Image (tube, rainbow, N blue to C red; front, side):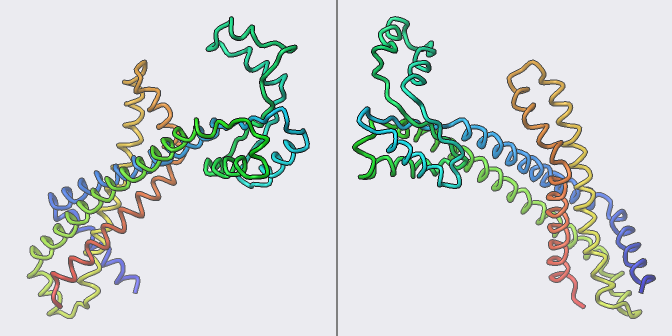
Length: 304
């Protein structure tokens, strides 16, 4: 059993290197596909992190009329805190609102001086943050409900709604574009591997015929081609890992002091921090493409 496995593996490795340029071409195409997969995975992780940071900075403020009692404001706050995705609900007193208004440098000093502690028209409010921006829809709906609408003066939800939509659109676009690009290169790699194996089968037609005549089993003939497909993925993985790993270092070095450096400085740490996770994704993709493409090709080409 072990001798049989050893012979199959040995045959696969010999055939892989004997194919020369065919193996090199398939490996390089596969390498490009895995580089795209690795870069896409890193961009996806980076985008998720950036979008999460942006979402954490977004909040909405619900302002209450002076006719609203503290009990009604606290009831509104309690309903919000009952939502699992709402992280914080901060009460803003009239004094807090005044202090915040006074600190705004975007407002002219003359206008700021018109508002004082003795004459303070600024409303009380609640500043709300959530890990899921969809929760802000609930906040808006609650504020417009019959229970609270008569006591609420205004809400910043509509002002932030467009920003929230743009952030969600950005995240979706990056994911779809990166996934589409990765799928395209994976399909190209699969076609190249399949054709490479088909050519290898044609070149070894006489050899396969002789093997069958001397009693070689179907698996002994076919499995080496599957292992060759796996080797395309394995060597492509090693090359893509080296190119991305050291390529990022070079890009960081040569872009220092430029605007592009700030982007790469966020991108690179995520790749290095998730190196083994991203490499595992590349390994699974490379192995699957290599083996499945080889299997489909030999089933069409090898008539036993």
